[in-house]
Amino acid sequence: MASKLVIIIVFILDLIAVGLAIAAEQRRSVGKVVPDKEKVYEYCEYGSDIATSYGAGAFVLLLTTQVIIMVASKCFCCGKALSPGGSRACAIILFLICWVFFLIAEICLLAASIRNAYHTKYRKMWNVDEPPSCEVIRKGVFAAGASFALFTAIVSQFYYVCYSRARDDYKNPPY
Picture 1 (tube, rainbow, N blue to C red):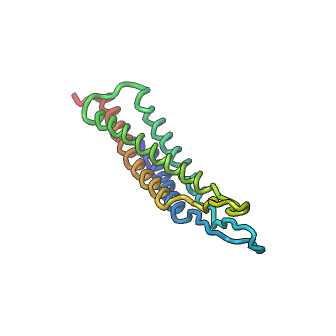
Picture 2: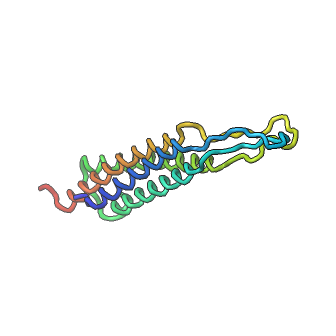
Picture 3: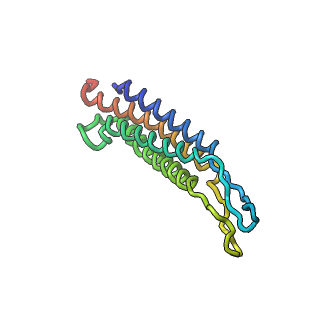
């Protein structure tokens, strides 16, 4: 039987991670060009930088839940053998899908947090033909991270339940 405590803890942490990733998408930095008082140079002025913290928080929470699930299931490769059958096959497939979704979510959240934290300070100070832009993170990168975090949450829960069922079938064979 799957541990209800593990399922509840992982569900709550995953839900918080998805919420933080959505909040990061809503609060991502926006840059605008502002001239100085003497109109000699231009610089970029950015809004709130809280999205970087939200994205990093979602990254850490998602990593924590993945570690909890993998420790609880002994990363599927350590421990005793599982009973052959549908539960084991389902657990193998969900294990692989879980890791793919997890890696995509982590890459999106990490890249978005790093890019959101990068700010161009001075735009036009030295008569350059093409000054740097006030470029910010594109819309949807944090949202993609949130989506894949949600997919990871769902798949990892199913993986843990299937793994636990296959493990219990091995301990208590049906015959």
